[in-house]
Length: 227
Image 1: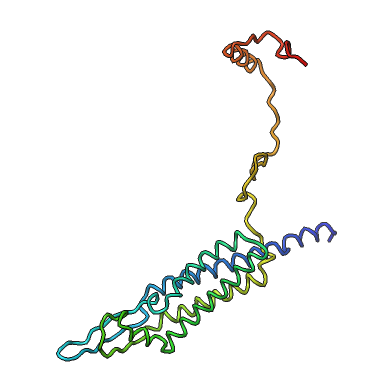
Image 2: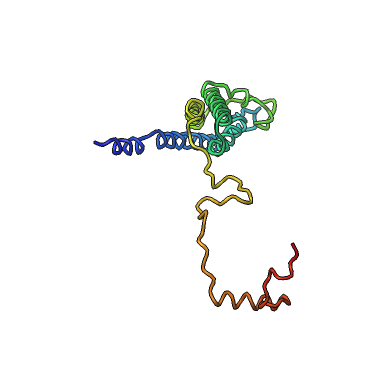
């Protein structure tokens, strides 16, 4: 194999495609974690039973994830925004976004674990949640959604750590998204375009435009100019 063939093969299997795959995987993990967190926060995490004094029958109420753990929907929104920010920023900015993603994942994981280990008893006992005071309140955790929140937290932590460790090598937003100056040629546009030869029709049109302006097209435009 010649040296030129080896260099071509090395370029095809070089680091740039791997970096793009790492970035894509991180964006998928971050977006998926945020979507799961938002979805779980809108679901019922706790089924509350209120036992009242006879002859009043027992009453039931539901506590959603957003009510029991308000940080869960906030972290979900943060993760979705961070997925976009990872594309737009580079260098230290990407490192900061990765740290925020990892912290949000930790908060999600702790919120889910807290719900699964009985940490929602205080939420069940609050009168502002169940709407009734001076009653015996018991709660049964609906474990599925808190467990999914823990999973979303794990995915977010993985995405954040990957961005912190590998993010500096990833590509950023393309030049076509950058603001261009007055003399900047847009991406994808031709930088030079060959001039079309002037035809008789062009000269004829130019003469009529000169007459419209009150000028004599038969005279030298440089005539009469002073140095």
